[in-house]
Image (cartoon, rainbow, N blue to C red; front, top):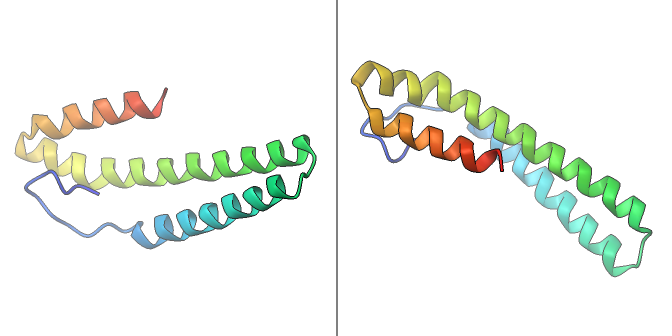
Length: 95
């Protein structure tokens, strides 16, 4: 998660993130099947909303992990590039 920075450390949430992404991927496949089967649009939209919520929660977990580890290390080492990268990533995330 912090591969651009000179510091390395374990991330406590890696398994949780991978598990969330696997579930979201499976859910997207199910939605694809729903569309192929011609399911009602409201049903598809509800499922898409669930996927979006799952992705948003995954983003939250990654951001929290990044703040607690990478950014703490960056502040302690004066790594301003890491702070700029976080700012840019959050701006993209909020679009």
